[in-house]
Image (tube, rainbow, N blue to C red):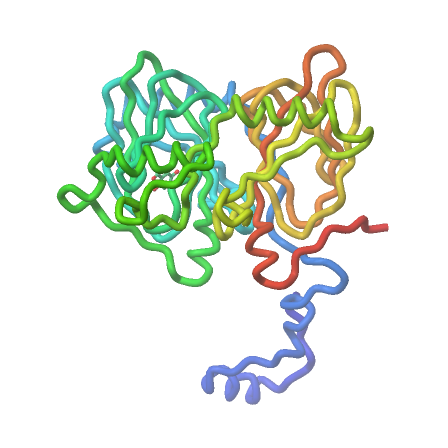
Length: 346
Ligand code: GTQ
């Protein structure tokens, strides 16, 4: 907060013209007492509200013109055109129609897609073709060429998340258009990734160096893993799995973290309050989450946000199967900042 401390107008002018400002009038704004004070306002975007608006964009905006046909989930705490859903995460819903191609480009922020609806969509990332099925998480890491296509029928949609706000904050955000042949499909690179999942490695001479050996995380495997974990984990343990780089065990991307959670029907889960803000995406089921006391009734395809240290309670509906949520947050960044915290505020 800006506080005035009775400085003379003449002194103020001297400071301003010297490019100086007194810390003591801004200290509590820059370093709020006790816990972070962000702009992010928790919000809920229902897929059933977004879908018809996105289909209208499909009629009005050709993909070649849009480059990416996306409606951005704009944080209401930052005004109507904010290019972010939380302090650290950009989120949007993208539509591609049959036969379309979203042209090849690359950019400094990393992105990931979470498939919402449709069949026949695919993304090619540095020559590796990733088929896209509902709930799959597909990475397009920083600096890797990517384009999207659709050889099926009907609309194909997914949630995009990018660490764009972080890149914008450090003035490192930019994109490049395709160069000839930059993203031609490379069957050997795709094979190498598939073999890695089976614990097999090709000879060094054939290996494509890749700091991101896993680009596609199929939902059906994640779902099966969560159901197995629910069967075998001790009562009360969180039923969740993190998306990691299988070679290093580290988070699959450097800034954003991805965790899939199973919520048993009818049971309320009150996780620790975590330092990173988060975007939650509903993959299956329906239920309710309260974020700092604000209730959001969600169902498959919905997305909602939670600011730093939000107090959360999740509950999947008692009638029906478990709920499956994906949490996308800035945990890897917070760990790199030497700051990540989980706690319960009194
Ligand atoms: O699909 O490459 O939502 O570059 C925003 C920027 C999607 C993409 C977004 C992008 C993309």
